Length: 128
Image 1: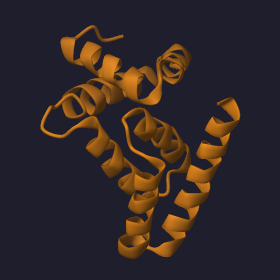
Image 2: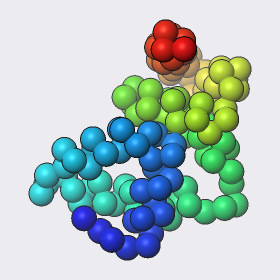
Image 3: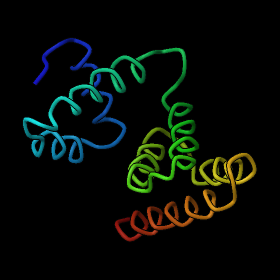
Image 4: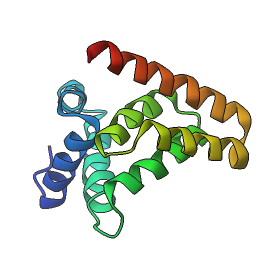
């Protein structure tokens, strides 16, 4: 596993946004084939991009929600809805992001995103 400063920075940010439990599980389950992807994602996605200070994490989360919704990646969307909430994005702001997705990227993407968000919210409400 990489020990670069960028990897360490990315690991800290990744854990803060999507949760240490998820990140630790992803790294622990990585094998020789998948570890290079984990290193790439941690170092460059989380360290090099999320580690930049020109956009706050809340804004980056909102952008991610829109892009992941449009790309139809439900697993990642669920993960990033939780991350967005950790970054201070409100449920109302999440709703607004998905309404905008519906207008610019299509209603089916918005419908699926609303459904996934509701599942996340219900799961969180049960834990509260």
